[in-house]
Amino acid sequence: EVQLQASGGGLVQVGGSLRLSCTASGFTTDDFVIGWFRQAPGKEREGVSCISRSDGLTYYSNAVKGRFTMSRDNAKNMVYLQMDSPRVEDTAVYHCAADQKMHNIVILRPEYWGQGTQVTVSS
Image (cartoon, rainbow, N blue to C red; front, side):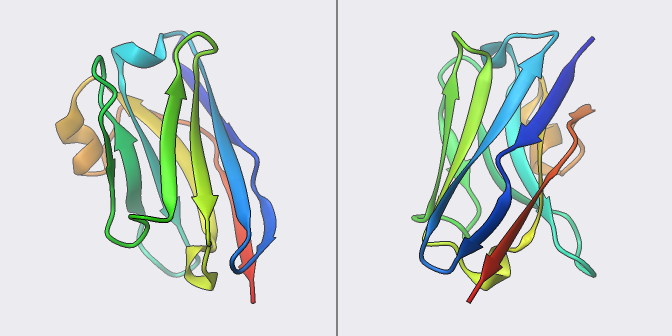
């Protein structure tokens, strides 16, 4: 059974740093496209970043490009989101999700969703 679980959220100050982790089970991380998504209260879900399957290329939304870094550890079956210089507008529940097709990640409809972790950025 494919499962994902995001963790590592919490309270962080503007300009600080935080690392989110996504634990994957039931599949290997390099066999799926994995994405990070977020949803803030009253706002629509948005894609944050994703990593392609075998070649591990990463992609970022304009909102986080240059500040967030996504990485993958296939040996541990883990994916990470390093959040540097967070802003108040980054406050949201962050989810990791997986799909075998990049298209489904891009249109925000991955097949497998994990439980989210709350990130709150204070000024």
